[in-house]
Length: 539
Image (tube, rainbow, N blue to C red; front, side, top):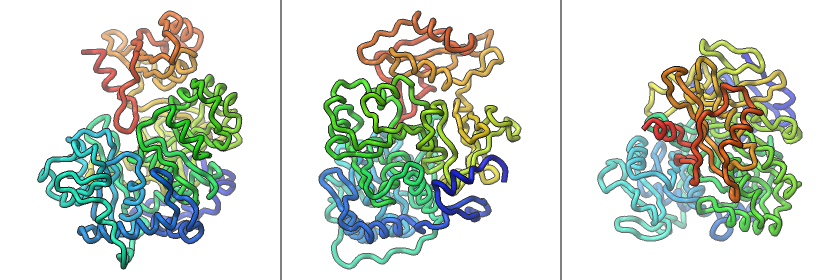
């Protein structure tokens, strides 16, 4: 094996590990002691913590309650023809029924498919057809984005969780009390959740999340961040996204803690009220949300003293935000992490004691994970040098559904090609600079847009920004910045130019700006749509 593995990080945080072979020949480190499936993971918590709260949403479900509902739902789904290998879609906001369906499908050996509430009808139709979904559970207000009857031949049943639209079965009618259906024998390598990638460069691809990968990821976050049954996690990102589903919800349920679901799209005031009332201790949010929270005057009136772990993903946190939050919430540790749908959420996590000294890093590779940094020829680069991040481990999915072309191109020698450009220093700290496809070539100089964005985000007037390359007949590309102002600030372009002159090399500085009043455009998974921004510049 090549690359850097830190044995102290593995043994000190992850517990005992051993080498195993999975997915037709991939050799990887795995946790020695682990549940064999999602079903076994839930059963362990039901046995140990039957009367502790498992989910808070519209009321509270204990682990005993959740197990009873999952048992009845599995029976009802089986009577609708769902069995091993069947696909069951879930189209709704953050409701407890999403998690109940995930566990019910796992018990049947079926595959659950959480769908974003922000999808268009054509996108829903594609995903249901591609996955051969036979049953969909949905929220009544999203009925308008369901495919027309007959458009997806495999789709036989529609189940509504909060009403009875034409042709749909009520959710309560399929939760069957009585003799439970026997659990189906499943293997760790069986797919149990299907999540479609955002499709920024083409049609979405269905990443096949297995019991093996989900269990490892669900154990990794608690072990890295020190979570246990006393913790209460705020799920404020969609359960249709790998971060909300695996990184937060299943991770807290793996240790017997409580998942507090924020049903609607993120609203600052609702978040603070819910976080305070439910005494949350753990969250994973995007840096922009922390910036919005830090600026709220109401923060002084909320009791958030229990909130101790604030995870965030991918990009460094602006120092100004860190300082504001440190003043308002001194008990809160802000811990960067990095991952993807294909890595079942975590690839790196910031060690608890080292975040202040490594604010430009996304942390160290998680226990059992492995990262190689390679050049364009696939050769490893020296520590600290940039290259593409190649990721392996039990959390990496075996591949995409029905996409042999993408599997051959993106999964190489047991590693997933992330497409991200980053580096790893001699101490094992990883930095992420840019997507390979979004790196700007200005007259032969490589400009990492994320590096420029991180600098701009440090300016007091900037809430968020996106840097893209605009075509240029002489230099090939020039650097352009889209900038959104913080509440109460006006963006002065000349002030930003002077700031960038002091902060970065001349070839990295944005030469032109677009000052935006509205938030940056994002896809259904919350990623900034840079292709849309680039197209706006050339049209």
